[in-house]
Image (tube, rainbow, N blue to C red; front, side):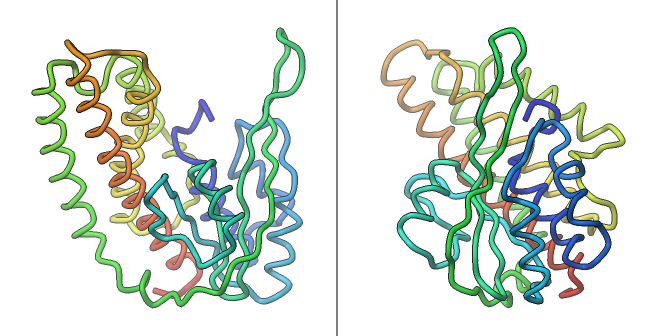
Length: 255
């Protein structure tokens, strides 16, 4: 996902909602939502079925181990798969979910990417909780958390995120400021876009920071840094999912 530093399910949620609204052919969904992926399986078929069943919106959840906020009530298999992938999309009306599985194919010198969208059962979800979300409060809470935890990271005796994370942030900012705007569809509420911008950048920072091998001045500081990064990662993931779902409901005509 090098071109767009957002979870695949975020873009799929929004573009698939446009498919359900009849504003985009289902066959065009992979190209619009996942332009940096060579092959996609299972996505078009599932979204086509959801449209035939009368579904209006596709929502997203970005769970982390120990944090299942936003997940629909479902089988342990879905919970486990979505937690491993740290993302899924689901439909609130008829019920059901898809979890992406990213794989590399080809030779060492000629590799490509394939995403297999695996179907799972899930219960329908009332949308009134998402319709009632206050993105102003979501944005304020994320900015406050970012400021506080960045200060805490600095006090841990190491750069807050590390060099790999800074490079990730530069890519995220470049995409955000370009015409593609994270690869999102047009017509989204400005506040939702702003929260996606912020939360997506913070998530890219924390993901890269956790993946890097950078160590602090001692083992205790390294452990503390990891704990703080995970807290910030979880907060950014929740904010990103909330903003995406508010935007999806807007595209579907709920609000």
